[in-house]
Amino acid sequence: MGVVNVTPDSFSDGGEWFEPSAAVAHGLELLGEGADILDVGGESTRPGSVRVPQDQELARVLPVIERLAAHGATVSVDTTRAAVAERAVAAGARLVNDVSGGLADPDMGRAVAETGAAYVAMHWRGHADVMDGLQQYDDVVADVRDELAARMAALQDDGVRPEQIILDPGLGFAKAGALNWPLLAHLDALHGLGRPVLVGASRKRFLGHLLADTAGHPAPPRARDDATAAISALSAAAGAWCVRVHTVRASADAVRVAAAWTAASGPARVGSPGTSPLRHRRH
Image 1 (cartoon, one colour):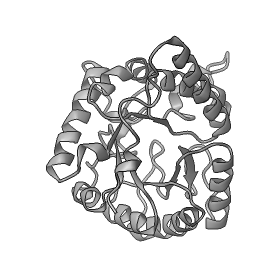
Image 2: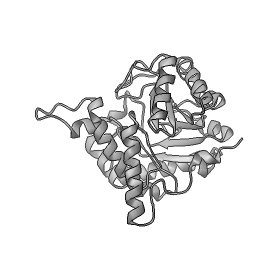
Image 3: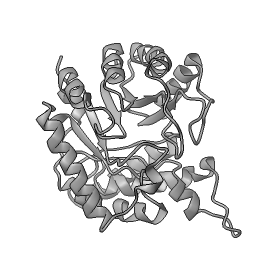
């Protein structure tokens, strides 16, 4: 999944692809590098960011989604708003990537059920301006698993079919640096919920801290791409369905390496369990 940020303030590339024509060109470039899905977002979720009005988010994402879908791309919309999700699916998106897992908008479950789109439910405890104060866990792996299980149950109560759902541990969201590593090392805990898993580690803060210089200064976002590719390989080998990244080629190669490695080691796990939720969309 290649990231197409149509925002002026995203943490790693804010403003670079803000104009629709630039965003579309970037998306097509990511496809050429091996992306299977393009994730178009019009609202930054960087730590401390504030929300944009719904009409502004729509104005940012809809032209880009329409043009990328017209090029034959499989498009995801990165949004926490049900109305944006509905309009995006009507414009050609096939997947809704909701960092709030449906908690930010009580209408999201209904919207996903009615559109039939595949749906990423990420682990989330609050919006970007407050999330750093919400990172108290007894056991981060068990707590994230249990909270995602509760989100799955609530979404199904709203009519979302289990086969639509993809789970995301929410790396960096209400999680300080050290809390992210157990989640990556224990993706099997999420696989135990029976749904595909999306890993979004690309350029996150915890990688910046890992790669800090001798003076303790975190590596800047673009200097985290090699570490991101390493996580892509390890996540794929551990059975992740998809990795969400800002630069695609290295991670696409890393996933191929993981596939070859696991195929030679025994039963393939890359992409398990099940088939792509994108195949289950109702028409």
